[in-house]
Image (cartoon, rainbow, N blue to C red; front, side, top):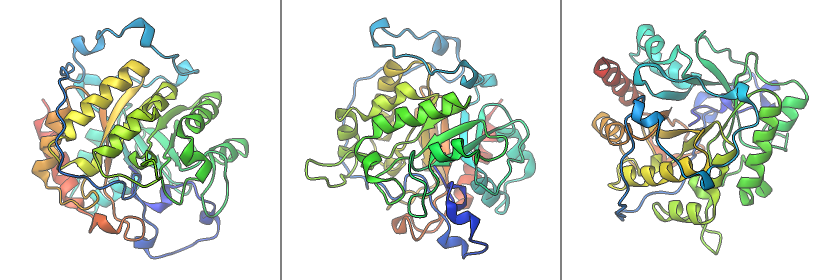
Length: 342
């Protein structure tokens, strides 16, 4: 989900003035587990389309409903006219502006109360109506290796100006401390409690690579997804206002929509109040994604998700298998979406 190192809350920002851009870029989700060609079959009914009356009245068994987030002030605003919620970094928006995305397109899609814009410590959200998000990869550590922690940022009043929400991107990588990698549910609860106590919305974006084999090895998709579910890691959603499913490394696989739907069904049972976002990426790990593929994935999932997290990976250092950033692919996808709206 994240596109640039500069949007990680990192203490190095206090000392770094200028470093080559490709070394400063990082994407939420990193490389993550690569996909395999397996094609699981799931007999799950489709949800009503985004924004429909039927969708808003979908029943959930009472016994499965988790406690709602602690702060009613963090409840997301409803999207108008069936439009999806968006989660996107300011860096991704700037990249697209430089590659053919007009100001009018950006404003139409993202300058509203159902768009969440991730900004870095030195950035200001220029979209007046959109919500501002600060992203973190750890909760309690505050050092050069792992970046600024959520707890210290709140306690020391170091959050970005005008922040509305905090996102917690814990993954099996160097930016999340080991204790948090092995206990994602516990640390997600702590992060959520901190955010809600500060009056902020909370977004969790856990990596599928948190679920490893019995020997601690990162697994390929779809096995990593099944292990993630069996390990109980989807239960992080009970602490969320928004939950993002990082399944982008399966975008070109035939099981992308079915796994997304299975996750969505499970998350709705865990926390029916949380918004369910699905990540769409222009150049995920070891895959070449076309505009047509993004359109296909969007159309196959729009009937049951609340929105999308859009990313443009361009980190050679963090995800060497992601290849060159396909900025134009994301721009063309959004142009298509804008034209397809009523």
